[in-house]
Image 1 (tube, rainbow, N blue to C red):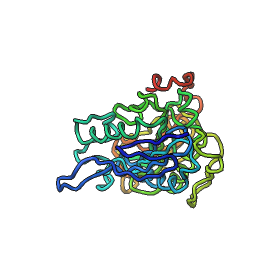
Image 2: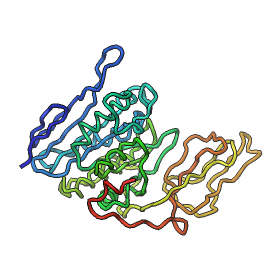
Image 3: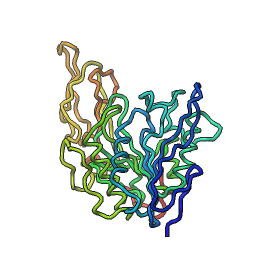
Image 4: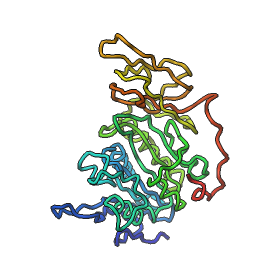
Length: 346
């Protein structure tokens, strides 16, 4: 029989659903700021999964993904526990900013400290109250800096359990990605928790295809973990811009940014999801009159997984992100034995 779970001093009984407001700090006006968390605690024991979004406050697709997942999942049908934090960086979300008020990046501040900066304290709170109680995690993001991303999973594909969840998510691409210092994924991996990072769409915009892929992906991971029956993973009720793929995700072990060889106005001729061949023309960079133009060609064969949305580029700017395919793609390393993800995550 499932036991009650306690978060921030509140006990949630089996079969319960609770909205918690975990105190973070006060503004200079003395207005209280809290971390909103919804806990769905199933009647039967099972995995404990967290969903987090808006760690970067302007990345809002994940907020809608979490809302739709919570609309679809009910405690009485759940094995284990779902802990959903749709707005982790409350400060940045309010200001429509990636950062906290001190301009720190929350996703470079984990595992945090109870006595550090505002970012460090918030990271420490999230690790203590959410991550420490979970067996698995899914962190939801979008592209940044006037860029957009094809829906994709980034994870340690050399770890068996993480790869199992990454492929179950069903995004078009699953990318083996090392962790960044100070990231939530790195801090959780050091505790032995498999974590998926989902990227899709752009900042401060709803991308309905990315949202639909994200909702379906979370439900499919929950089914793979036997938290939900298979009938609960039907596609999310969002009108699709394009059908969801039913094929296995493309596993990728290297990516490469195509950069501008000169400054000017970019006219890109490929779209997200397009496959390109080596030396294929991707677009042109010209002046305002089109009098002088430089052709942009693909340095490798690949799949377009990210691109700039700003046509004004400086020399060296990243303009198109390619997943390396074909002869240029590296060979995958051996997958770690079950249960070794904590020590083999980079």
